Image (cartoon, rainbow, N blue to C red; front, side):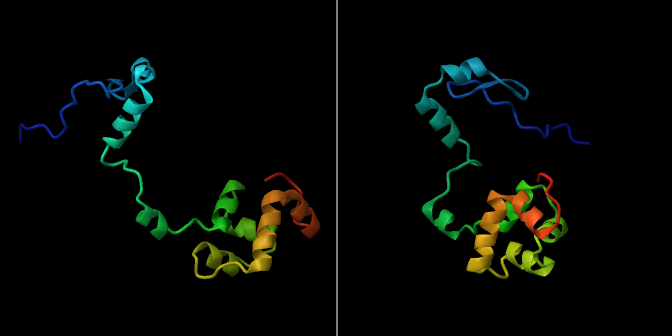
Length: 129
């Protein structure tokens, strides 16, 4: 059995360190930092670098249907049933195999703005989402 440690040594405290202990944040130290020091500390984390313009351009946006459905905390089946959308169509939209046409996009905007009114109009229940 090896006697070497598998954990990383704890970094020494410096001007940008706000760790008070294991898993704790020294809020007083953070409050004492200037905006520039906070920005520099954030940029010093190699795992949390800001995206480049190329990365933003290449990123696929989250389809609105997923965002909307998750905001209502509904499964695909529940969302499709409550708003009379064929389940296959909803899945195609969410998996980006197809894009909603202009009428479907307008319907999704109405669902987002007035979900209970849509449910009442469809007779699928007027309860809150």
